[in-house]
Image (cartoon, rainbow, N blue to C red; front, side, top):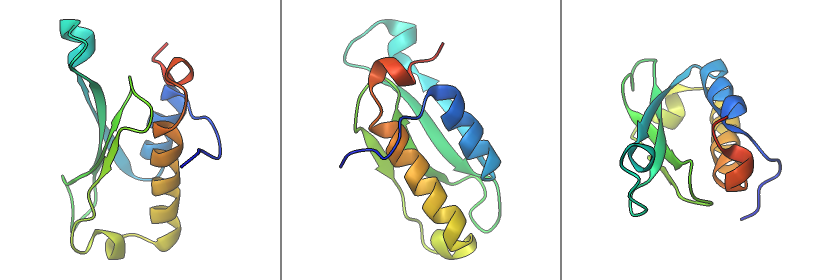
Length: 104
């Protein structure tokens, strides 16, 4: 899958916030320097009924490494437009070149 547009770190974090979700950062590779580790951003739902659920996890230091969790009722808990925007944002960020999406 190829991305429709490149999304940098600031655009991604701002985009998920604008959609009503919260980023949770786990930067293990940056902290340890271990190349086997990864730097992840988890996308957390803020609204009921799925408040606190990890909706997705995206790797900042890889291309295409993304996990989307489709919890029961999550898709139905938000509007179809918001769901589509969230999936597009996650996909575009995941498939953006590592140098472009790097934290600056």
